[in-house]
Amino acid sequence: VLRIVACAMGGLEKVVAALYEHTMHPAEKVHEPWVKHNEAQARSAFAWLDKIEASPWLARDGLTQADVTTVVTWDFTNIVAPWLLANNAYPNLNALRERCNELPAFSDTLPLASVDQADPKLPEAASNT
Picture 1 (cartoon, rainbow, N blue to C red):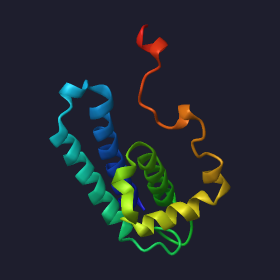
Picture 2: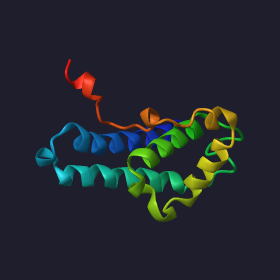
Picture 3: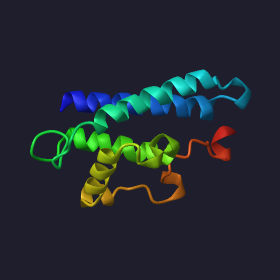
Picture 4: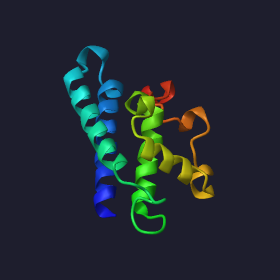
């Protein structure tokens, strides 16, 4: 369980690092090689996770933190960097996401409003304070 959680968190950290580069720096200061490096590491984490055959869960016989962390990472990535998940590159993770998001604990907490869509832009009023 811990190895899976660590890998999912590592992938999430790389997605966030790439996102941060684009959202917190002016366009002329974005270092694209750093973005590509982080995106490649995120893809590597997703590839490793995708090789785990869920039956139906990633570890053990029931839902664990491994499943929760992986699906939350997956859902977040799908919002902020969907190109990393394009073309059904990770079919086992897609299937896990679908299974988990059928459960109320997941489906009841999916982002719904624009403010929940991990939009990294700061509100205008907040940037003036």
